[in-house]
Length: 257
Image (cartoon, rainbow, N blue to C red; front, side, top):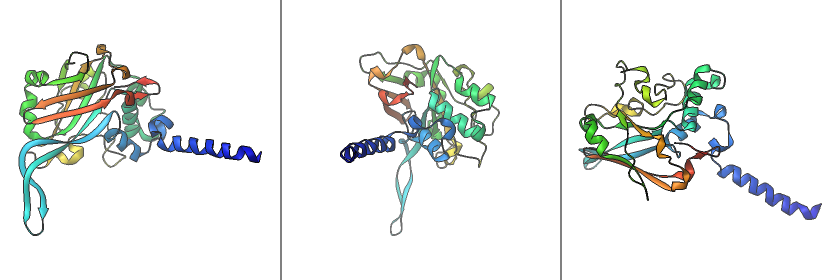
């Protein structure tokens, strides 16, 4: 028995290392995700990422006690969220319904809802890009998902929801996406779902910040076998570029986007 102890210890250490290295969304049911974990899946996961983009606007970027304000190009913090991905739908359900996420009929409907499109939600875009975003035809031309060996995948629709506090344009503002984009926890209750207002309301960006929903056809058949893809969208002086390792977007054995 004593001779077997080293092997058992090695096995236990290997299991402990795997558990510590594994992502929480692979090891815990969504009903047990904490507020901190929800923030991570929204902002630092294969389906959600917060990143800086150059705005082309000049302003105060830092303050020096000796020299005073330091001017430079302002960078906006935007969040990219694949809202049709199952782990994101689960996170939205948990964020809104909290302890009732496993029993609420509304939460169940949100999680089980199927869609024939992929929806990428981009939040926190600077107000200076709003004019370019309003030119839907040009924005569509300047937006694509790029995958090596395949033609560029263009969005079938791009939607700008109503500003915070304004009446929505329709049910959830994006009825054709098949995803209720209005799901968010009440203020002060749990983690904030990424939104323009959720990241400071775009102060300093002139006209406030705003969100966009990019809709892509699921018939494109993107999968982990494609290796890598890049989302690119140009809105005037603002260009968003984000690369995705598609094998990382597999959840419970299935590719999710």
